[in-house]
Length: 203
Ligand SMILES: C[S@@+](CC[C@H](N)C(=O)[O-])C[C@H]1O[C@@H](n2cnc3c(N)ncnc32)[C@H](O)[C@@H]1O
Image (cartoon, rainbow, N blue to C red; front, side):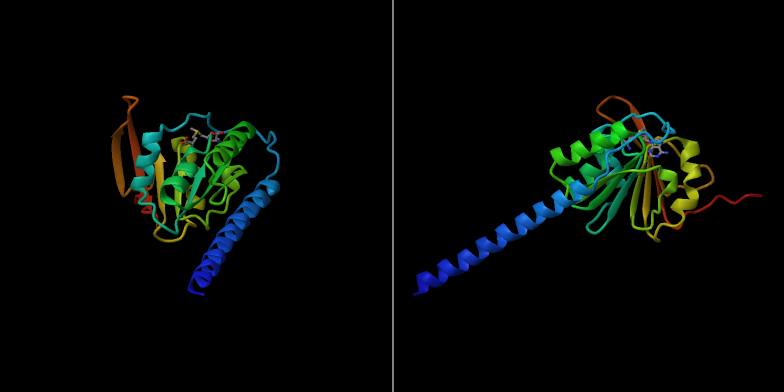
């Protein structure tokens, strides 16, 4: 009798595991089906240069990514920042890029790394985005593009973190500036801002 009870309990546990895994698969398949085929919208504002992986990890460390965060990468390239955030911190992440080739690459990267349940890639112009869902924003753009994003970044929830690779944001005081030497031998400068943004005083 005792043996039978144990068998029934194990059967139930196994059944629940199978059910939750298949639900997760269905959710991932549904998300993939909803993805629109990327198309040409307009020329990107900056060319694609990927952030080396050790620099990606340093950016996420600087942002102090923690459970419950939602990471947005504005101009996500092949999706390496959002994929790394999901894989190494288990957080939700969204990558946005305007270039159809990058969107395809990033979606393949998400699939290859099996993080479809945490990451989505959207083909969007970053200057049209509502950032209110994000708690961490990563940037590898250009100084003038960072400045152009200020009105959107100001709408982030208080305590959100913004990390930029190599480029500052004129008029906004960073909380930290870190120089990091990559395995590639180059020194990369990383900037951290926390919301509400601290604006430089104008005379
Ligand atoms: C320097 S790459 C950075 C890629 C990635 N974030 C990384 O650090 O590896 C900049 C990316 O921004 C994208 N981009 C440029 N202008 C954009 C815009 N207006 N909206 C969305 N993406 C844009 C480019 O297609 C490119 O993939």
